[in-house]
Length: 143
Image (tube, rainbow, N blue to C red; front, side, top):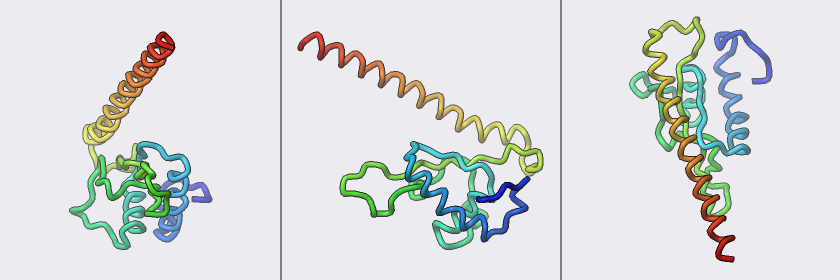
């Protein structure tokens, strides 16, 4: 979105939908492992653009989305053998007090799921770095 707003009610569906391509391109350029979409209306806009239709009430859910909803993937435009399949998508509720459709405990549960994943990935990455250092030291001792 090219202009600041106080909340999403100041944006038309058309404005939100036209911003999806910009977001996808930014994700494609940075290639993060995952992205967090904050707010139901933003995810609904992304869904509309990616799937070409409105999301059904029973299809919406907070949390991790299906792999087919990964963002930033090149859609077959990449080089053969490209391993990156797009960023996994986590949809979280808005933290705004204006978003009062969920109780605080429900909001906390949604965000806790993402927080647990982040903590787990930090540990996994730290362990992988330690393994790399150990392997390098072994190689140097042999060579």
